[in-house]
Image 1: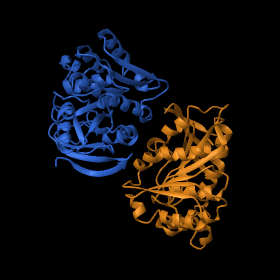
Image 2 (image 1 turned 30 degrees about the horizontal axis):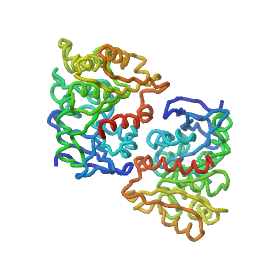
Image 3 (image 1 turned 60 degrees about the vertical axis):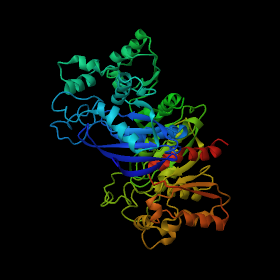
Length: 284
Length: 284
């Protein structure tokens, strides 16, 4: 058993499992939440929606306040809520900023010292975690996986989807950082994880730069609140992503939701619709 | 304006207001959350569901993790999330226990010193708060109010309903303390708020003792998780309430939900059905 189940919690007719496992890519124990809908069984495995959380979050926030379970239970979709970074690597300064280091892995594989040791969330999310989960939980159908996320996790969802054609059946995002090379959060993170010199590497993890290179059509759903302070501060830049989509003829729908902020009150209000979006592809 | 609005947060098409006001009954500033559904307006005021929270909670917990807003928005029902006690009265020891004093007002008017100064949550919830809210928020219909609650708040919902025929259109509860005079939580609270001597006073705030005296029929919905440790420890005693209902010929439906615990994962799983229960009466 590669996973330890630290709690099993009934939720919307299914089960929310609190899991922990030793991960090689991140060189530490990783915690996560896994929601198994009531329909899931080894003989009828459920498709999977991965929810990548934003800055400062763990795998708990989405499970407690995102309200994905309600619609996931209805549709028979499992939800995976990973953590947002390695924890406890004892890298000097890793816990000092809310937007860099622990709680802020940005879903990349760091190449710059000292973060290159363990800050490998790209490999963890795209490879190590799903392999381990699908090997152990026969209630999950590893051939049907979609991805979504919030803010930094929205960046993660979009870039992981765009970099790995065929890996995910669909993608959506809540208030995603869509053009990190051009916003303060992304510039700080990429400078710290990749270094200032290798800007080519930065673009490889920028949804707005990746979108035109994606082979084939897309159907990407994005919600952004017009009252979101980080949107107003230019951290999210969904207009840049929309322009790239228009220029490249890609399908991207950005819904500007009147008055909504950046919080889980925003996420929970539209979580059901994002599960529906994934369900269109997962249950097709 | 008797209320200060410290935040306005978009949620499920409506607005969640973070409010604060100076309350006479509790001798302090009281905070609360008020959810206004999208349908509410001064010309078409919305009926109101009051959610009383449990031990250690504030008015924030239900609003963040209860998911009442989803169904309330659909039905056009406002939700009031009050705090669970006065705060900051500087009574010696008031912050020392999780189950007595601050965060644990038990929805009674304390008669024993020193808690008789300010620990008047019964008066606050049944009188001062609704009067103030309905005077200020014309989007609320003060003639159509229902009540629900969790654990200590389930005790509050049941007792306030049973002690005030006609005040609330309906009542339901999640894992309520139904027979506080016979459980450790209730005994500790009532001893502290009323004193050991006056046991008659205790019974006036015990749902199982109040139920047979209620004039007329009832339709009370209660959910209790079979995996709830506080249920197993005998803090909730729903069987006693059911027996009293049977003896008195009152309508009480207790649903024992397989495997559910005492947490907000349990509440959120059934919140929609409790809003539906209230809607039957509020929208009749």
